[in-house]
Each structure stands twice: as structure tokens, then as C-alpha cells.
Image 1 (cartoon, rainbow, N blue to C red):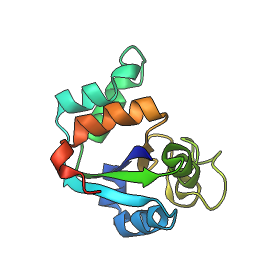
Image 2: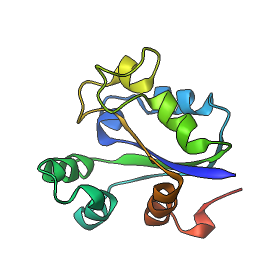
Image 3: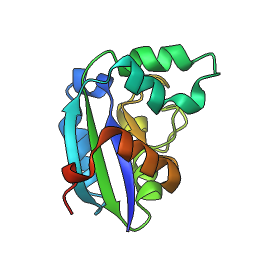
Length: 138
């Protein structure tokens, strides 16, 4: 079984889209094994986005993700990473396929509502950043 981390970002929480997004994620057939609402601090955000540290957009990513509460969730099932990324759509909502979360609901590349792990290896690292093993059910 594969696991993936999903973040419903602060813009989705602020716009009241949590229910709509979670409903779409639930319809993938993957099993929800952990979920919580939290507000990331700067240190956690920097660890989460460490791969982008040398990019000019790094500071903007960090500022955005700490700007408000978010939902962190773990989904489990066959090809979980690929399935979740497919339902989310590509990062730029103007290039995302119709019917995806980002194409239908996102405003722009930064305010794209959701994050999904991009590989099994990164999912494992991201999951350990957000959840302790005892918080995972299943």
C-alpha cells in the first residue's frame, strides 16, 4: 500500500472550500488514514519546502503556507501519489485539466488550494513532518 500526504492550503480554508475538496479526494477511493487542522510555523514550512530553498519563490511559498490554518491528511491505497496528483491537477490552474480541483477552483499558481506529495519517497518524508505514527489509523 502506498501513502501520500495532502495539504488543503490556507486559501482553501479561507474560501470555505475544505468540504468540496475533501469530497473530491474521498471519491478517489483511497482510504483516509489521518487528518488534522494546524497552522504551520516558519520552521516547519521551511522544512516542508526545503527542496525549493534556493529558488526565488521560496520566501513567497513559506509566507503563504504560514498565513493561515490548513488541513493535513494522509491517504492510502494503490498508486496513491499518482491518483491524488491526478485529481488535484497540475500546479498552474490555467493548465490543469477540466474537472480537477485546481482547474475548477484555484485562482492562480500560488493560490492553488492543495498540495500533494510528488513521489513515494517525498510522501514518506512529508508524512513524518506532519504526523506521528500513533496519529495514523489503519
